[in-house]
Amino acid sequence: MELHELSLTQAVEMLGKGEVSSLELTQALLRRIEDTEPRVKAYLTLTAGAALEQAQAADQARAAGQAGPLCGVPAGLKDVLCTAGVRTTCGSKILQNFVPPFDAFLVNKLKQAGMVLLGKHNMDEFAMGSSTENSGFEASHNPWDLAAIPGGSSGGTAASVAAGSSIFSVGTDTGGSIRQPASHCGVVGLKPTYGRVSRFGLVAFASSLDQAGPITRSVADAALVLSVIAGHDPDDSTSDPRPVPDYAASLQRGVKGLKLGVPKEFFVAGLDPEVEATVKAAMAELEGLGAELVPVSLPHTDYALPVYYIIAPAEASSNLARYDGVKYGMSVRAQGGGLMDMYLDTRSQGFGPEVIRRVMLGTYALSAGYYDAYYGKAGQVRTLIRCDFEAVFEKVDAIVGPVTPTPAFDIGQKVDDPLQMYLSDVFTLSTNLAGLPGMSIPAGFSTAGRPIGLQIIGPHFAEETLFAVGHAYQQATDHHLRRPPL
Amino acid sequence: MKISTSEVAHVAALARLRLSEEMSAKLTEQLNDILTAMDKLAELDTSGVPSTNHALELSGAMRPDQARESLDHERALANAPDSDGQSFIVPKVI
Image (cartoon, rainbow over all chains, first blue to last red):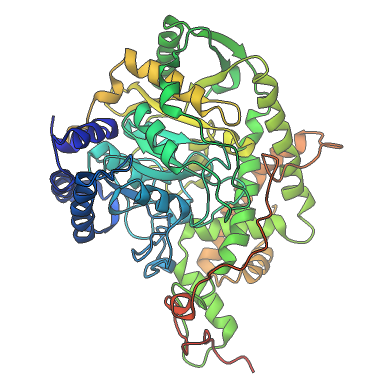
């Protein structure tokens, strides 16, 4: 096995035993980036020089007996996370020269744990999209099939972990943006419970839905990353204060005796037959390991899409009002133009088509005369969706089903049809509306060789159950061990 | 027709966006498609259902009222398109 193919837990073990140095590992990753980036385009910014310096410092820290849990592990991060001194674009031209003066809370935690930062991953602009084609710079490609999208919005992040150009990464998920690209790229993606990981320093899209979480090559890797980035942050008023459990211990729990709900609404017309067969085979595997599959119903599933596409754009229209050309980012100031011209020109030239579409939709939904019909109604239906999950979790420990209706589609296939694109998130976004944790794990491949994921959803703060189920599955199968033929 | 071209122009003004004629026409069509799909919510009787604005109960949202170090002028203005070292500079209004 080559160094860039290591899982995080393998890398940590080898570094700990002195079988490889951080400098050697980082150099191997940088060579892999040089080899794959022309084809995959997973990174927007590379910090090779700083990474080598950090690797040397990590090796010195380890020699001095001061190694944190991620000491010397090279990784990139989604470009929505603020990194002090390293440009953070959020995939948008309006922020293409923005250099944050501080680290996001979770970035600080990763640095304290010893991570070596390789660079920042490509993404859909302001995390709005399901294919990374909405990046303000360039589209990323799926390492398993370069003609296919890697998913979105954390498409560069998932593609990088799959391609071996990052040992692990952290993405964000507002309606499925960790789980859907993880599914399409054959890696593990975890959206933790809302509030489990601080959002401080995460460029805001929809504040009541955004949540950061790990994208990794195994469930054990995801448990390790979450144990580092989870925890209370006084700078985020929505951060939850409860202590972080021992996620590593939960891996050994197994699935015997666990009840796994199978929502009938997740297996309906529109679900690709190969996805259905793969997900059902994965559920049968879990049943064989000792879990009990229980038919359940989430009757308001069909309403999640319209609720999400009212609430998320409404919050986005408010959050993105800060891009005015005054404080940071692009500023277009025409000769003789006034303040209003600066606002209009900056925002119209700085935002891409999808961001403009969602800002328009959100502004409309919040405007006088339409608030009750759209935003008010969506908030009420959000309650019904949350109550559906609460009722189901009185009967089962977790829910299993597909992540997304189809395997990765071709680049350009849905780019002119926003409604079709939005349907990619039909099985993921209800968990964001309810604030629940959800995880995608590799479960197989289509006949065309494109990965298919299994989604596991739990009650609030039940990440340990997700890890137990996912790890048990990965101990019995080898889908997560396959690497794309790049 | 859920939203007209003139309403699109009004919303664009509220959102501080300048739209070309071509973009305005395309957005009108796309927003109509999306808003029509949103009509599905009207099927549900939600009278008496409270709204969820936050999926979890907030606890300890207030932090201690203590003075802390904040960004200094230099760092706060470092990304500003235009500044005089003390303030952001914007086009003249008056």
